[in-house]
Length: 357
Image (cartoon, rainbow, N blue to C red):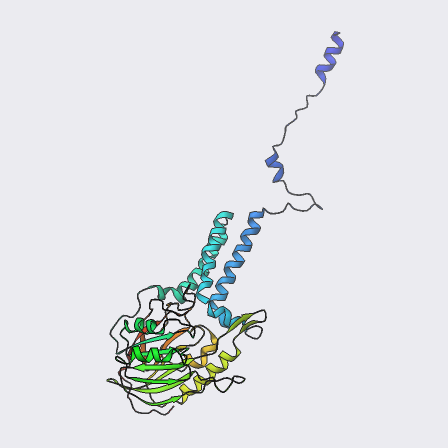
C-alpha cells in the first residue's frame, strides 16, 4: 500500500457500534403515535381474580340485596349461603398459580365476612343445661323401615318428637314403637307430635297455600304441659321448592310460611316451640314471617338434607321465650333427611299465662 493511501485511511473517523440489549429496548418509551405495549397477561388475570374476590364478599355481606323478583335468585343464594365461602380457597389457589399478590390480599375481605357470619358456628355451641330435648325428623313417605326409624329416634331420649311425611300405612308402626315412652300424641294429616308430657288443646294449623287441594294438611299445634309450664308446640311441613329453568319455585313455600307466621303471631302462650321441615334455611328471606316471631332459631350448621350428602339444614327447632341449644344431627335412618335434635332452655322471666300480642 502506498504511503499516501495509508495516511488517508488513518485520517478517517473511527465509528463505534454499541449494541443495545433487547431488554433495554423493551423499556423504551413508545414514540408519539405508537401504542403502548400491552400489560402482561398475569396482571390482567390478577384484576379478574380481585374482582371475583370483591363479588364474593358482596354476596356474603349483602345477600339480602340480591333481588327475588326473577327466579327467586336471592332465596336460592341464601339457601346455600355458607357454601359461597368455598370460593375463597378456590380463588386463593388461582391467585397463587397466577402469582397475583393483589388478588391474594383482596381475598382477605370475603374470608373476613364469612368468618364474621359463620365462623362462630365452627366453635363449640351452647351445651349448657336445658329443660327439654326435642327431635325433628322428616321420616320420608317412602321409608321402608318406619319401626327402625322410630327406634333410632328413641336413642336420643327426647321429650318431644315431631315427624313429617307420615303415611297411613306407616303411622301404626310409629305409634307402636313410640307409645311406651311417649303416651301423648297429636297427629294431623301427614305431621305428628309425640310427647312425654300431656298434650291438650291439639288442633290443626292451616298453612295450606292457595291452589293446593283440601286434603293437604301439614300443620298441627298442641299445648304441652311440661314441669316448666305450658308450652305451645307447633309442627309444620312447608311446601317443597323446585329448581328449574325459571329459577327457584318457592312461591307456595313462602305463602305457607306467611300463614304459619300469622298463626304464631296470634298464639297466646308466651313459650312457643316450632318443629318442622320448613324447606329452607334460617338465612332465606322466605322464612322471615316465621323467624321474626321467634327468639331463637338454633343457628348451627347441622346440615340435615340430603342425607346422602348433607348440604343444607332445612329441618328446624325454634323457640320463643327460650333458647335453642346444642343443635345436632342424629345418625341416618331410612329417610332422605337426617334427624335433628336440640335442647330447649326456657327463659325464666317468661310466665305461662296468656299474653296479649
